[in-house]
Every structure is written in C-alpha cells, then in structure tokens.
Image 1 (cartoon, rainbow, N blue to C red):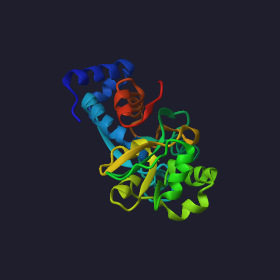
Image 2: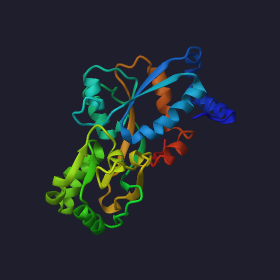
Image 3: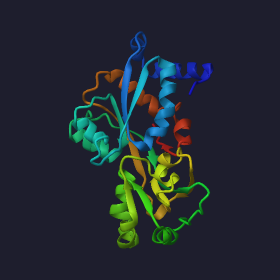
Amino acid sequence: MRMPALARRALLAALLAAAPALVPALAQAAELLVMTSGGFDAALGKLAPQFEAATGHRITIIRGSSMGVSPTAIPARLEKGETTDVVVLAAPALDRLVTAGHVLPGSRTDLVESTIGMVVRAGARHPDISTVDALRRTLLEAKSIGYSASASGTYLSNELFPRLGVAEQVIPKAVRVVTDRVASRVARGELEIGFQQVSELLPERGTDFVGEIPREVQQVTIFSAGLAAKSQQRELARQFIAFLQGPEARPTIAATGLIPLPR
C-alpha cells in the first residue's frame, strides 16, 4: 500500500525524532525478518509497506501459529533453528519463547488486544450469538463448527465449551483447523460456522462476520512483539517494534479489528 508523500514524510520524521539511532541505518537498506501469528497478520501486512516506504528497509514476513505442533507454528520454527528478528504473537506464547531462550528477556512489548468472533458463509443465515444462551443454542444446532489451532481455539475447546455445558455434544462435530484459516473453510462450505480472532476472520472473502462472542464469555488476547535472541538487526528491530506501538500505526491496526494498546 503506497503512502501519500506528505504522510510518508511525517512518518519518517516521527521515527527519526523517536529514534536518532536509526539515522546510520538509513544509509544502507537492510532486511528485517518478522515472524507473526494470524492475529496480527492483517495489520502487519498493511504496516510493513508503510515502514518500508518511510525508511528504505525491507520487511520479510514469516507466518505461523502462536502454538501447536504444526511445522509452521512459530515455536516449532524457532526450535528448528529458523532465524528471525522480531516475533509477534499471543503474549502467553511469547513469554514461553522467552523462557525457551528464543526471545530476549525484557523485550516484550504489548501491542493490541484481540477478541474472538464468528463467521458464516456469505449469504447464509446469521445465527444468534448475542447472549450466552443464544451462543449455547447456536453451538448445539450447528451441523459443523471450526476453531483455530492457536490461542482462541485452545480457549474454546478447553474452557468455553465445557463452561457452557456443551462439550460432549459439540466436540464430535467441531474441527480444529491447523494449516488454514477457519474462515477459509467456512467460505468453501466445509464448515457451517467458524470461530477465531476477529482480525483473522475479517479479511476472508466469501464469509459474513456475525459478531463477537458475548462479553461474559469473551477471552481478550494480548498480542505482543519481542526481539528474537538471535537477531542480527537488533537496533532496527527495536525501531520497528516502536513503530508498531506508535501513533502512526494505530488507525491501521484498528481497521483490522484489533484494539491498539496505549504506548
């Protein structure tokens, strides 16, 4: 996404004012590797080109889930020795990466809050999930249900379904989506309803966003950025994390269904 010249100059000025150490880096373009889970992917896909346009550096995005045993999951990638400079994923998963030695202690920067929502195939009837009782009925009546293999899916399967008293009826018809987005499976008609972080549902074509699950049973997930322990671009990585947390990024983040946290 190209930025207007005036906005590009304003962003560059803000970055330079906040971080004079960036000036020497501008003399030579560098590549910054950023691993992200799906919750922040849409926002990052829009913000990376803005940072590139303002600084001349290049952002390479590496995608994976916050948790799970998939080979593309971020913890699995790092365990295999894949390199990156910045990691963005659910805060509890980031903390585990700090413990495992993959992310520098003290580098965690909380960026956004993310909520769980539901989609149906485009044009399909919108089931009621406006109250806890309505959500329970929708889960029981649905022929098939999709949930993610990451933070939101773990909450649904391990906590929400049992809490609602529907686990025994729901789990047999629920699908844990590992290598795809839940909304993609719903768009193809493979699943009747699907639950995931709102920011992962909204970009998918072929679905209708029904809404967030009720506040009383909602789980708000914080997504955070951290500096990879083996980063070869630590100073630039810090500047990029500061940009993600800064005021210039907030409108873009909010437009993707996330709630920016105060700096």
